[in-house]
Length: 188
Image 1 (cartoon, one colour):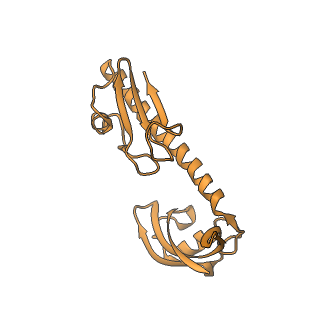
Image 2 (cartoon, helix red, strand yellow):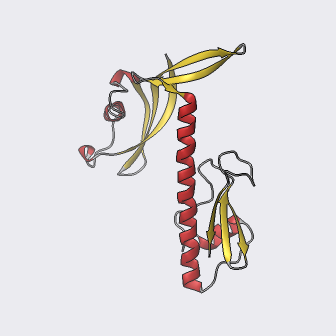
Image 3 (tube, one colour):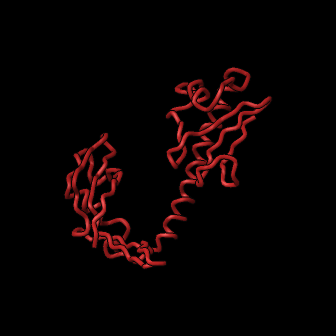
């Protein structure tokens, strides 16, 4: 078994009330999710940082196992297991994470599109800008809060103004512009 460090944002449950979150409480909450995967001894809480009255970040070391396979003379990680959970193929986890990031990025683009529409409604025209940072500066904070500048891969968003539209985009999972996995939104 190996230990990995993970950051877990923990929303304080009503059971915690207005009290601060202790290491013991955090360990119990984390061990309870997902069900029957982690036990309290699988979770070592390194640090609890309460960021507000209703949110906290808990740094932990989780009991984690890796199944490796030798492929063409080189060891590769094939499966991972958290605590006492089942083995999960790394490829499946990567695909699932990509799907989540694509969906989150679409939602971010939708937020920007709503902000552009709000600007248009308030001013009677689409914003004039040169690049995404310029657009986000125009929209924030009056029309776009919180400020959105990065996609779910932590890469900058892009934007251009066309005659009667604003096009906003992410270069998508492959990180290369102009490929089939780019994520685009047109706002008219």
